[in-house]
Image 1 (cartoon, rainbow, N blue to C red):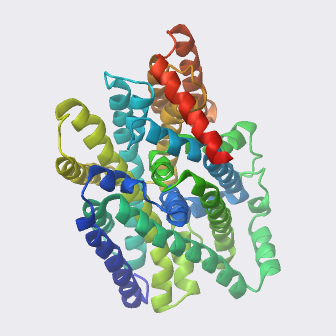
Image 2: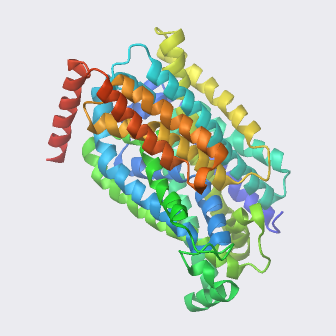
Amino acid sequence: MFSNGIEILGAFILYLGLMVVIGFVYYNKTNTVSDYILGNRGLNRYVAALSAEASDMSGWLLIGLPGLAYLSGMQAGWVALGLIIGTFLNWKFVAKRLRIYTQQANDSLTLPDFFRNRFNDRSGLISSIAAAFILIFFLIYTSAQFVASGKLFNTVFGIDYTVALLIGSLIVVSYTFTGGFKAVCLTDFIQGTLMLFALVMVPLFAVFLIGGPVTTVSGIEEINPALLDPFTDAQTGDPLTFVAIISMLAWALGYFGQPHILVRFMAIKRPEEIGEARSIAMVWVIISLCAAVAIGLIGRVFLSQPLVGPDAETVFMVMTSEVFFSFVAGIVLCGILAAIMSTASSQLLVSASAVSQDLYKSFFRKGASDRELIWVSRFSVLIVAVFAILLGLDPESSVFNIVSYAWAGFGAAFGPVLLMGLFWKRTTRQGALAGVIVGGLTVLIWKQFGFFGLYEIIPGFVLSLIAIYAVSMLTPEPEPEIISMFEQTEEEVRKVNN
């Protein structure tokens, strides 16, 4: 336990109390399933931007990425670069079109719902398979957030890892269960601001205490010059292969299929606000990712005791305890909790919407009322959380590795289908179904065998695109009403752009 644990605990209690209060404030404002799942498409540009990025980056940003940089040096910069590129492309080419198209397509509330309406899938097969993949990969993804919370409370307060995991999980579930999308997005906005503050302050103060930038860089070179070489793996001293670099840059592909990020685009108040939201998001992402990599590198010089193996992912926490004191350290450490909570709550909410909208309503209770669907969503949050906790019970789990797996799953299963559905009107229902299945299964299989050391998102994404194109060309053209809806969307996009 940190020596100033009582003061840090006070900061945590203050922060967590605010998050839970927000959930209960929005409890009575959640009257329809659209309110609970999509906030009735009422997000302003600032909340949409920070909510999208806070839910995107997760505890991985303050635990997984700094840990990778601590062990492997500037090699982690390739991952950061891939994420920056992916963020920009997603906001630039997907956000506005998705916002317009989901409203045109029978006011779709979820990604599987959009697939069903976009391709006029009366059988509900596409949406149900998509919902199944959401549950599979979000169990993995949410588990990573709970693992991060366990490491946080274990490192800071010396609490048993399992107990720490349960505490973090309970906090997230409480405000997601009560407040729904509006509560999640407002807390995301607060958490995104806190994350940025934490990420910037820790490396700046650490460099100052070391003696300045020149001393810091010299210290890193003295420990291991390879830490500053982006083309060398600092752990082994071997040059990075082309496959390794491409695999890290390929994180960019994942953005097009992340349901918890895409739903923010769907929820923004007006498509015209997306340009300004993109600018806000890009500033936040660039600063945050660069700071996260810097924390890992600076930690090699700043910390007197080296961190080994999974403990490398605690570098931000340990640095914070030595840079700041008492209550201020608690506020900074709340940045990690903010990252965990923003993503876990979003993932739980998307999982719940997949159950209520795409499974329960589609196959069991087509005439279910909004109130009934809200409660189905709430109880789904609890069920998904329980399974995610069970998956995260191993304290040796790596947050970075868990997130990379789930990221690949969503990117390959949904990214190609979304892009082809938004930009190619010849995409057919059968082609979309083939894309979801091929992309998702390829990731699940490739991950088990690790062929060529290639990140599983690359073969999954490519094979999904091929499957969509080939099956679409071999099946009849989409119905006239589907073509008409696509063309109407194109016209609306042109109007907004002009």
